Length: 137
Ligand code: AMP
Ligand code: ZN
Image (cartoon, rainbow, N blue to C red; front, side, top):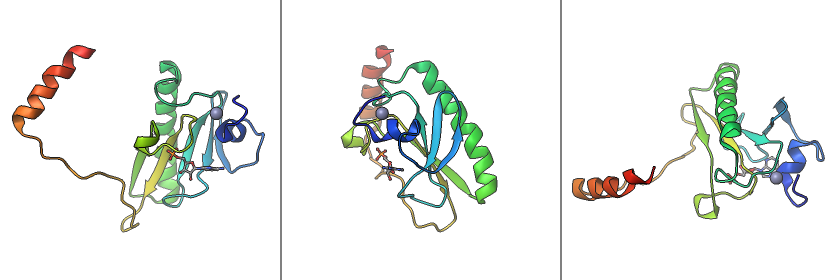
């Protein structure tokens, strides 16, 4: 646990919160400022700041857990869709620097926007970029 981390404290019962699921690795809580009704956060119990720090195996477990939870929650909440959002870094909108996945149920006409302005690169620009990037892995 990291002393000054709010999500460490919520995930490990130091502070009270609204928990909807818990296992050995994760605590899942309701977001205090939900985008929509039922907006939940998957929090690992151990502290990892972001996707760069979290071990691959635990990240895989988080993804599997997200699938299990949204499958049941969508039915229960009557959601028409789900956004799974995971921000890394301040520029990307991360405000709490303890890895978390947002599970955001979507309802028809809920008035929320989760998206971006589509860019319009040329076919050449895209193909040049792909050429530069594909050798990285
Ligand atoms: P992010 O911007 O991806 O770092 O998301 C942080 C999320 O944590 C936001 O949606 C906040 O509403 C939520 N949040 C911050 N503090 C708390 C808290 N004490 N309990 C529940 N959710 C919180
Ligand atoms: Zn933490």
